[in-house]
Image 1 (cartoon, helix red, strand yellow):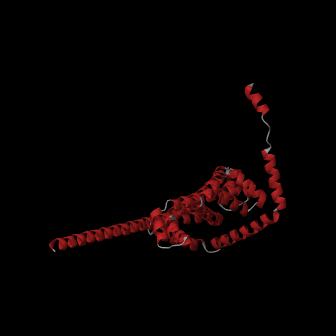
Image 2: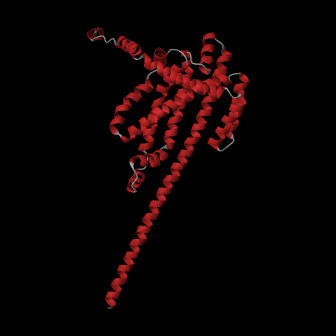
Image 3: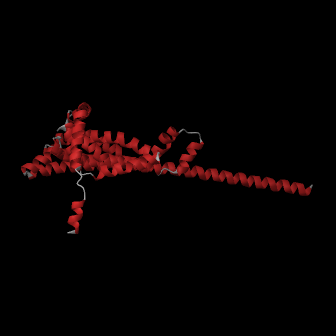
Length: 326
């Protein structure tokens, strides 16, 4: 009885109706903007998809294998790349995998171009950092299907809703890990750069970003994984690729098609994760080398100061001896 009375005493807030009215106002008032974004992003996706699907699958497999070798400098990942992408071709899912990869690449590039500058801004301005954290929390916890629904409302069905929903869903890790990486740069290194007369932009580009590369690459890795998961879900919104294959398999109860689509997603996920992780490890190696170099330089400077102090003490002692003998 008490709970019922309390519920009846609370005012009813039509948040859903207000949000729907606001979205209708946006689509009617700024329809030209959404059409422009749809055409621009759609053109980029079409160009990327053309680059990935026009060459022979075997040419693309060779390109992916060389990229894997350049990232790892070993033969494990290149061998995995050859075998798994040949498996995609043998299943007839290679074109769909390239369509999915095109969506992931465009969404990742857009998320990185927006997320990394925001992370840099947050790392250099505490007020900005405090302000964007609730926004990032909201973006990461909102169900992905809600993003897809809104993207379809704004951009209609097709490729663009998948890219835009993946962009919003996957951008927070790029912001957070960029800010974290810059904040973790050794303050003594930054102070040394400032002492040598480096400008703020030179400190950022020459010291902070190179030393924060490992953290930034970890953020890019997370962006890629989240984008891949989102573009698969975007198959419900008309996006082509492996996501559409999985949706057709679910709606038609086609187990074989669903397994093939799932295997294709797993292959892309493993390949992209290993390549970006390898570049991140290279960044960590460079960071350790830079830290060791700065430590060695500080040690040498300390030794020089010690030698100078010992020389000064010895000179003072010699002068005292000569004074006594005189």
